[in-house]
Image (tube, rainbow, N blue to C red; front, side, top):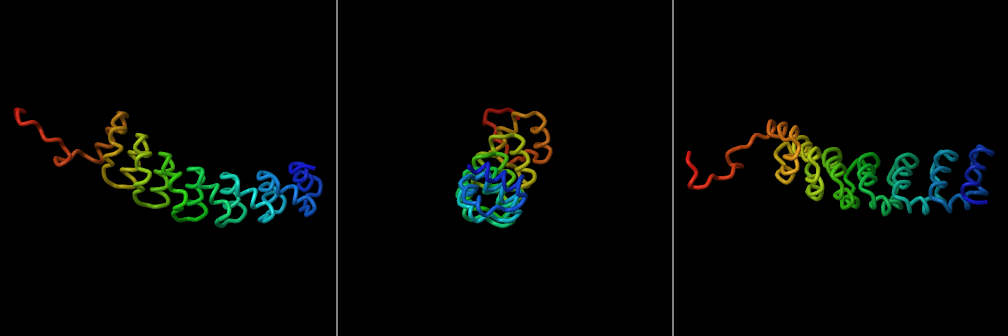
Length: 185
């Protein structure tokens, strides 16, 4: 009997936990998670080691099953920008330092991490944010509350965002380039 068969026997035939099949179920991350969620409706300690090999399942196990941090799975969670962001926002409800390197690889996740988790600038993710016009604009407006020079070049490629950005952050004399001496005033 394999993990799938053992899980399905517990879920569909017994419709109850099946201690005799748990060792087999614990050999597969997906079926270990499913067993915890659908059969036990509680943590499945025997399957946690294999669940901890999957970034996605580790995040969901922490959020839906443990409703608390899943320390064993954090090494896998940090392999994904999305899972690191959601783990910080929905599970830890605070910054997730271990996951910041992964988060900083994604424009969307960096912006959301700054806005929703840090509630301030995220310098490590600014290079990624600056690759996307919409995220650069939103980062300037909703996180920084001031111009985001690193993202201005990409914002300038989008006519609508360029206009709205200028409305919120008018070009001030100190940001204007000096005119050459030969320029006629």
